[in-house]
Amino acid sequence: MPPTDLERLYDEHASALFAFLLNLTRNETDTRDLLQEVFVKLARQPRLLHGVRDERSFLLRLAHNAAIDGMRRRDTRERNHDQLAGESACVFPPSNAVDEEAFRRALHDALGDLPTDQRAVIHLKLWEGLTFEAIAELLELPPNTAASRYRYGLDKLRGRLRPLYDEIK
Amino acid sequence: MKPDEFEQELETQRLRPVPPAWRAGILEAARDAAVSQNSHPSNHARVSWWRELLWPCPQAWAGLAVVWLLIFTLHLTKPADGPSFAGSSIMPPLDQPNQLSTQRAELVRLLENAPEPAPSRSLPRALPGPRSERPSPPRA
Image (cartoon, rainbow over all chains, first blue to last red; front, side, top):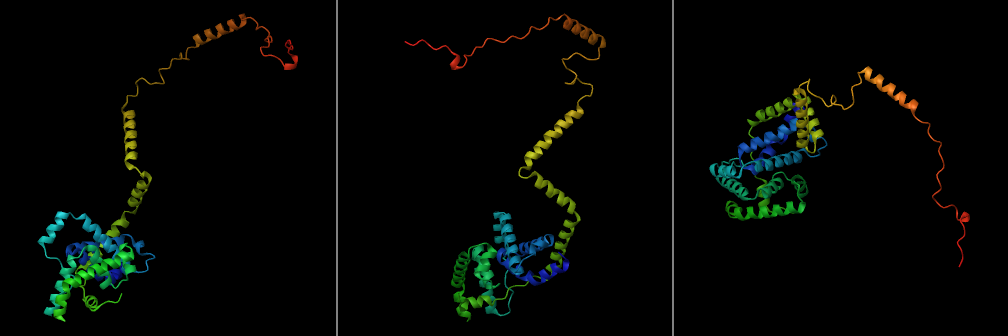
């Protein structure tokens, strides 16, 4: 793959991949490693993108697979140690408004309490705007499973955040 | 599914962008990986050719190769002047002209003294002839 193509892919999609990976891993170091893994794979196998209709979905799929493999590779003890030792990296940027910052912080924590598979669906639906069919294809799930994971996850978020949301509004 | 107000509020939350400092490092790592792969294409192709050849059980092929190497090594280390199977034939050596001529003369003498073979005679027929040629059995 020519370097210019790689740069274009990075400029167009790296932020989306970064947010998705950070939401899955909750760790900046892991996110950087996985993002690099995705682009190294693209550079080594330029034919991967041949015939791909939706680059973003394809790259999100690569990122998701890399994240799942990465999480499997990590030792459970090490993962628990990391989670206990360090604060998870926030998916949302800091805000100067106190209420907004409080809501973002609470949303970040509530997302972190969701199972990874529900979090992945929530992220792809809310912040990538994908349909359940597209999410199902990306995560290799039946569409009904994607929809039910979204509903379960959203209900949990609503239960956690509704009081704060009502108070702010 | 129509999103409710809460969903819409979530959708409007901005996500953190990728740190700008990562760009150069990640792209450089990707380029280096591609260059290092392209600099050894023959090795890569050779390895995949061997892998394909030895599929599905490389261990078995490796074991066979080891056995062949062992045999070859033993063959090389064996002394050259040692006894060989080819040299231990039970046939008499053919490089003795005197003995050969003696055997030939003896054979000629035996053939000259041998009696003429008797003319072949037809053997009595053991099997019965056709039914029409057989004597009819006495009727009771």
